[in-house]
Amino acid sequence: MREADSELLVEILDTLIPPSEDGRMPGAGEIGLAAAVREQTQASADVIAAGLAAAEAGGFSSLDLAGRVALLRELEPSQPAFIATLLFPTFSEYYRHPQVLVGLGLEPRPPHPKGHELEAGNLEGLARVRARGKLYRDA
Image 1: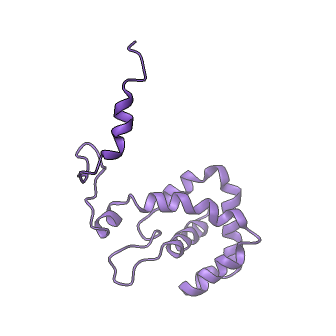
Image 2 (image 1 turned 90 degrees about the horizontal axis):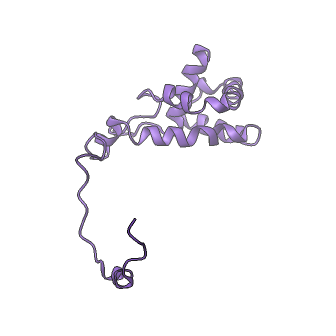
């Protein structure tokens, strides 16, 4: 991937998930997700390359956020798989990034081994299941 393509991908990721106005939440591109997204979309490298070329041809980098959003929407009919291919890896990487977790008020750590506190629930709905007894045999 060309350096210009890498910079353009960062700008597109910041358009998909822009930084919050209060500065609490970072944009997806500014926290360095481009490399992880590229890695997860290697099988669709041709789709990404075509989408980046179309965005570059549309002057994506020179536009403000509203213009960038509008351009990505305009590209959708001619590049239908481009944004769809970027969305899942972008969102999955973003919402597990330590900076984002802190911005959401969570500890920046994996859920295990410490685990998360769960509220005690009403388990009355399991009474029928418990009444059935064992449905398997010991091996």
